[in-house]
Amino acid sequence: MKKLLIILCLNAAMTAVFTAAFAINPPQKMQIVPEPMQLRETENHFVINTDTKLRFENLFPCDPTVHYIISNYQHFFGFVPDTANVQNENCIVFERLIYDDQELGDEGYRISVNNKEIRIIANSASGIFYGYQTLIQLTPADLIAQPQEQFSMYGVEITDNPRFEWRGSHLDVCRHFFPVEYIKKHLDIMALYKMNRFHWHLTDDHGWRIQIDKYPLLTEIGAWRVFRDTNWIHAQPAQPNEKATYGGFYTKEQVRDIVAYAAQRHIEVIPEIEIPGHCSAILVAYPQFACDDYPYTIPVGPYWPPKAILCGGNEAVMQFLKDVMDEIVPLFSSSYIHIGGDEALKGNWEKCPKCLKRMKKLHLKNPEQLQSAMVIEIEQYLASLGKQIIGWDEILDGGVSKKATIMSWRGQEGAIYAARHGNDAIMAPASHCYFDYYQGDPKSEPVSIGGYLPLEKAYQFEPIPQDSLTPEQAKHILGGQCNLWSEFLFNTQKVEYMLLPRLLALSEAVWSPKEKRNWEHFKQKITAQKVRLHVMGYNYADSPVDMVK
Ligand code: ACM
Ligand code: ZN
Image 1 (cartoon, rainbow, N blue to C red):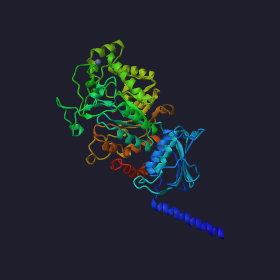
Image 2: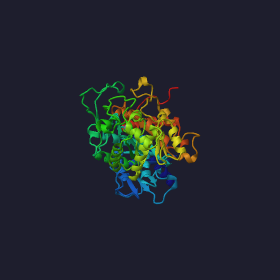
Image 3: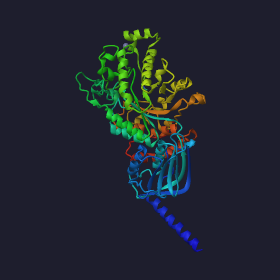
Image 4: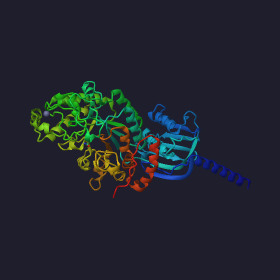
């Protein structure tokens, strides 16, 4: 009887403790984005407080992931974590497995929240990192704005592993330039939603954005254009003698810093250097690389049809591109360099004696094959430097090597063709992945380039096209990616507005098992995620989430 009384009293005391903890900070039900592979809620609770310790097993203290977790924990939870005192209770354990757990692959993890500890286990530092991101999402959405002395976490057992290896997000920094601090903020939000490829569109007609020592005019001249304080569509062309004051570029030191920052968040940075079109900024700086002596300028607004194209028959152009690659390659740890290839209108080539001569010499049937010849020469050069190429789907038009990876934007067809022919491909069809499109009724949205891609449609994105590929061919689809072209993104607030919350929809398409995706559930999760985005200082769209029927 006495024993029973003690148990009853203990129970009452425990309930009081938990009630107090909940009263301080009611936890949210599971709102994780992207939806994990397996999730089971349990009756357990774990209370995080100032005494909670962090323990790292089989991870070196100097590991960038350990550094990230310690500093992020302090920032996010508001406690300086104690990592020195080993204890078995009230502990968050990050355990890198010595023997691989097949179910987790390279990037997966398990997380268990029970009464005694939170344990995250993985085969790799990436898995530990993603487990930590899930842990963040298990905490109250507004925690960062309202730090607590203690708060409760629901018990849960999660096993998770991404569906695709390529979970990409592209940003055009040419039409408008965005500073290093913003690029880091962009990488932070990618990391929270387990996105792992940052496609950095660094060169275009409207600006060249990366320091190249051998060709200083690329940034002295090519990084600057005339400023217009109007919408893109209405921008008047530059007048003679008007000063080009608007733009900017990243120094090599800044690029290295960003690549390291991304790597600590398990994000690979893929630079894009456009060949052979979208090159006004190059031709203004180095007019000798054009087919003609037309006075090219850096456009300040829409530039269509684009006349600017690098001469395809000039050896000096190929040497220039190789010299540029010599300086680009050492800055980036990714095995890929994106060589562009889209929208290269070839009117100049059809009239240029040098281009025509080269076509004849190589027995090429059309200008598309001349583009292919350029691409293949650069591809081989990059291969000698240990890199592979990615190109927009136009590079298929004149034929590609077996090793080129195709980024399919004009629809899914490019990726389907590539996968059927044994080439790897990334799905980024404009219909579902162009986040510069309107996400609500244009009458109530900030002015954008056009198109219509509400959250629900972004959520419907499926990287493997139905009934088009055999299972073997489908393995060539590496994943999917959203693209953010910046014509109308005149500041970073607008970048965030167009990215969010659609990035969350994409993250489920590329991470979660297909059968786990559910629009109704996702819609509920978005409500809590918007609180999270708000307290983290991101500007997101609050447009109606359903498609207008
Ligand atoms: C593209 O949108 N021009 C790739
Ligand atoms: Zn030419």
